[in-house]
Length: 283
Image 1 (cartoon, rainbow, N blue to C red):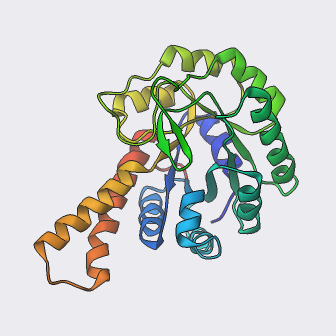
Image 2: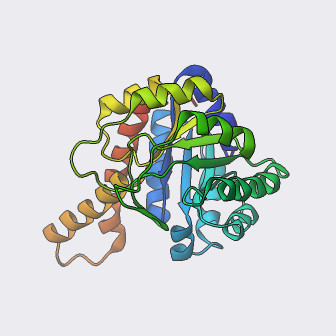
């Protein structure tokens, strides 16, 4: 069933689990996410980035995800991930998204607030919740590219001010997380996360969770993270499965036979993440 992310994240915050937010770029990834959610009886967010919309078409990919969500037996929200502009946000709303992130975190504070408030006004008018970000998350995610030296963690006091000034529904925090594969073992700043959680009442979001050790994810959930983004590990499972299949079956040209194992590999990753996030059985 198609729902907004607000009802999902508020329940997660109330009951101490996190909702998985998984990025899709095509039909196969969408199938894997929804099938995993149904197998685990878990609520889920299916995320589409501006890059995914450009690749697959804003007229097509949201329609595929919306139909999958409507037919699903578990709650599914369609989320715009790292919305880079007001124009992209408006196109997502017109396409039926039920959750929006406006990422203006690379801008100075006042400009970030201004961009977020403009989106909040438009989205709240049609009942769609908004996610915003303070502090910069390392690595690369579509249009977001910062070096390790530039990757500034979220300041707890500034988070309080940002939530009050921005009027949005969920806060994405930078606590040592990064997009893409990590170089070495990531170390989340749980003291910082705890301080933010004590000061901020709205649900908190963790980006760049692919590759973070399970024990740290568990601790992040226990410390108040309510939404966790996963993309890289799902993509990796898909591509590695296709590579293995084509190496073993070099003459196979039926894409259904090639992609089938890839869907299964991605579903396994999503199911495992759902278990770690403690959202299994919450639907």
